[in-house]
Image (cartoon, rainbow, N blue to C red):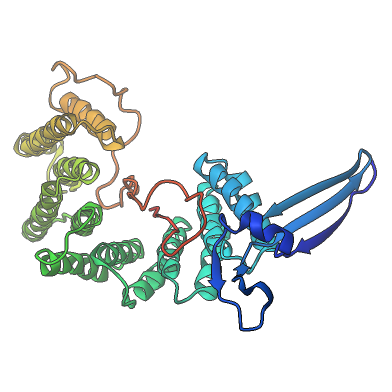
Length: 425
């Protein structure tokens, strides 16, 4: 096959012959003629996007391709809207390479980052958003790019970088209330994932304090990040609860139990406050977690070593009596999972938390009484060991953050504020 030869020609479309035909369709400014100009007619100045023409030759002959930035921007935007991310990345890249100084370059660079997010190519998206921030630092799109940059670092589990980016966001003076609460919440989430629980707690509380400060002055467009912050306050205390061990001898056990019970109630209160926001995604997550608290406390009791001085018969009696006393914890957990399922049904949402609550409910029924209806529903026989209460549970699924400004890129000429922000967790 013949090797393809290419050459590009950049043509500035400011030809006089096109002036009359395109004057009505293009942005123009009319200037009166200077004295002495023939005809005394106004001169029309046209600022048009340059056109690039590529001539390629191969075995089939010569092929001519002419395109400009608006055309490429439209095609790329259509691909992005249709989630054809590879095509969008290719065309946005072509626009940026061919027309780096075009007014379309800035939104193309931002939307390129969105397409790379769609591909889950976090490293490439980070490069795109960093490029926009560096090239257009004073443009409003730089603020949105910082949000996207911090979110992409989070997707890479680069929590120090994510925390640093949202600290930069909070230094800006162009944030509205929604922006500020979101930035606080995301910074707290990074600190939480760095296991800096004390700092994360302060950050999440700052979101609540800020909300109280502005609630009479500014209306929020979403309660998502407030519920997010409140839920993760619950998670902070939930983790502390898990880490609090129950130890012998009995005097030590009493102290440990008091501390663990206090942490349980504090976490429960935070989760209930999350439910009060009424955000379906976070409410269903919080309801599940309250039920989990009581089941985990039951597991913690069952993991306490039997006093070593007891003989075999006494050990059996000890465990039987203990089980009778702490059975109420499983009953509380069952009640919360049932209430959570009823709430999810009322809200009409279908989340992963609904499935988790169903499984937990069936498991608890089986533990309490295998003969009860539904005790074996949707859950196989217990083949996996119960997790040790001292170990951290797997990271819970995080509800998808809401779209801001729309779900697809604009397919028209760029203007101030045209870039769309889609945040991921």
